[in-house]
Structures are given as C-alpha cells and as structure tokens.
Length: 304
Ligand code: PSU
Ligand code: MN
Image (cartoon, rainbow, N blue to C red; front, side):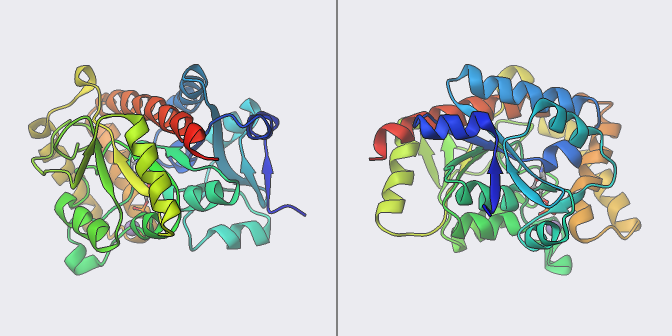
C-alpha cells in the first residue's frame, strides 16, 4: 500500500508535469480561529491555482497521509476540535494509530518530499523562542529545513520568536535564508526586522536555480525564502511589541510549554489585537502562495 494518498487534482498535475505547491494544515487547526481559518485555506488554494500551480494541502486523516484535501475535508478539519499537531516526532505515531492530525512546517516538508513536491507555502515557521536559553524551545522546523529538500516560502520569523537566534541556528544548520526583493529579513507582520538577510534574490527563477543547484551538488536540506508582507497590510513593530510581551508573560505565568507555546501565543495575539493580526496574516499567506507558485513553475523548466 502507498504511504500517502494524492488527491485527484494533485495526481493529475504531477502526471502532466505541472507545478504543485504544498500547504500545511497546522495553520488551519492551530494558527487561526474558525471560520477565518477555512476561508483562508480555501483562498490560498485559489491563489495557487490562479498563479498556474496546483495546491496540495497536507494532513493525516484517520491515519492516512493525505496530499491534497477535498473541500469537505478542509471544512471538517477547520472545525474539528482537539486535532493533534504533528511535527517530525509525531507524524508516524499518528499514522500508525489511525488518528487525525494537522502537519506543521516540519511534517509538511517530510510529506511533500515523500510525494515529490519541492515547494511549500506557509505564513510563519517555528523558530527559536524568546527565553530559549532557559527553555531550550527550538522548533523542529529549523532542523527539518537542514535535512529535507523542500523550499519553504514564509513571511519571516514572527516577533514571538527570538529572530537573531533563529537566524543563527539556521546558519549553523546550513539553511540558505533568502530574502525576496529586499536586503533585510522581514519579520512577519512588518517588512523590516533591522537584520540583514544572509541572502537576497529578486526573482523566482533565481531561487529555483539555487534550489536545483543545491540538489545537484548533493547537499541535503531545503531553503527558507522569506517574503515581505505587502506594504498595505503591514503592522508596525512598535504597535505589536507590548502585545507580544504580554502574551509571552501570560504563557510563562501559566507554565505553557512544548508544542502548546506557538498556538497559545498566536491565539492570544489574535484576541489582543481584536483580529487585526489575523488580517495581516491572511494577506501575507496569500502573498507567499503566489511566490511559491512562481518558484514551482520556474523549477519545472529547470528539472529534466
Ligand atoms: N507560526 C505562525 N503560524 C503558525 C505556525 C507558526 O505564525 O501556524 C505553526 C506552523 O505549523 C509551524 C508550527 O510549523 O506552528 C511551529 O510550532 P513549534 O514552534 O511548536 O515547532
Ligand atoms: Mn517549540
């Protein structure tokens, strides 16, 4: 039996040699509230299609690793309560037990690679958390980028993370961090972080070319493409800083640890900004979907 099940749409695109873009599901179950999560999941799939590629939203449903979900499946996942959050450590456990779970960036990369998909769009990745020198909270996403050959398009590390430390770990792990169209690393809700990006590229072709060359020289791992949020949707850092500090203090006071940290902080931010952070989040995910589609398209012309 196959390890994974492709949706008809994804299978057809692969048969025809057309570009496919992977999408994660933890952003749906743990990253945004219902019903916006469902609207965004549908909208992002539509954006990928409009840009000429095929979307493959990835999740584990009743133990089956699914690459591409139907609209009814997306709907059910978006409303489901207590869905497991699956990273590298949990993926096989969930599948072997026949359970349902949403894939994080790390697990989505693993699944995409199994299915032969090279490009993946999301909003934010996990990273090194503030206070990591005490908590040791470093997301498995960073280590996955070093070993699984998938190019991940995100909007840069969120300010709930320690951005300089996140960049240091990526450098240590040999992950190319490529800012798209600017010199600075974008910081999710804002276009600037005050930190110069290790690499800058201004076209999808250039990004695809570097990805293909890394593969040719036999280096494992992917790339992190950090794509700035569109200017019109940006929220400035000064507005968010106290809100993030409050959410972080609450997490510490309540003893939130492990895989609950990121969903807790994201949930509190949505509440504390009365949904403003969500509007920006939606805009940047859609923007990332379009760039990922362009990279996947460019990659097709480079791959023999
Ligand atoms: N950051 C966001 N939105 C998200 C996530 C991170 O801005 O939805 C999700 C992604 O699925 C990411 C995961 O892979 O959280 C990281 O969790 P952790 O920090 O526990 O590794
Ligand atoms: Mn963590």
